[in-house]
Image 1 (cartoon, chains in turn green, purple):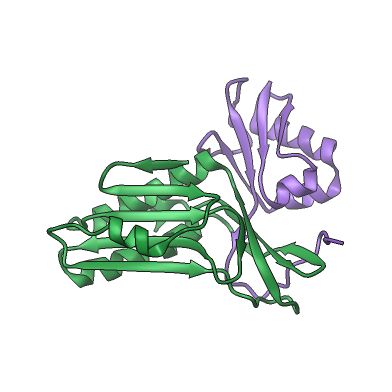
Image 2: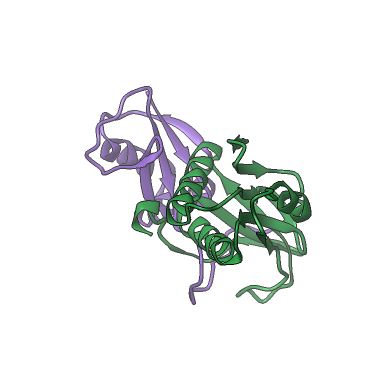
Length: 154
Length: 90
């Protein structure tokens, strides 16, 4: 469940994500900056329960297509990027584990920070991904109130 | 027959993630699906986007047996609305 070009690595995984490994993959000899974002499952939400885990559900083809579009857009906006990694875990993610990792390298830090921020924000808005919050004795879909956005509108 | 793909809350409301539904347009397929799966699914459907293959589509888009029509409910994000509890793990 992945698309890799050597410079870009987009994937969905039902195995634990390892941010350090993905950050290392993004290192390039001509890049002096790697910015890595790890979005971790947290134990609180708007429901009055202690959240134990999140369960993510998607369509592999549709999600990988949108994730690849996000990376392509980042490369258009910051042409000097070295590597771009966007991985999302699916199925169950226990509290404290990474649900999503973005790692971006660039010759200088400004592009790396900006592109990494763009990628995680765009991912949230454009990729079809649904999240259930699981607690002891119950589960519910997370707040669903935002229509998916076409990446071309970002 | 066109494949209907139901995702997230739409899958849960329908009780299935994939089905074959008759119809020559997206609208015909969605109407048939709403009749097949009932009012809870129709409620989710009313808030959802519909894609044909990997692109957003309108109700009058024509589809054939090689196409996949996907129902994509809104995704999670910052919102004050309380989520509804639709199931429990006993």
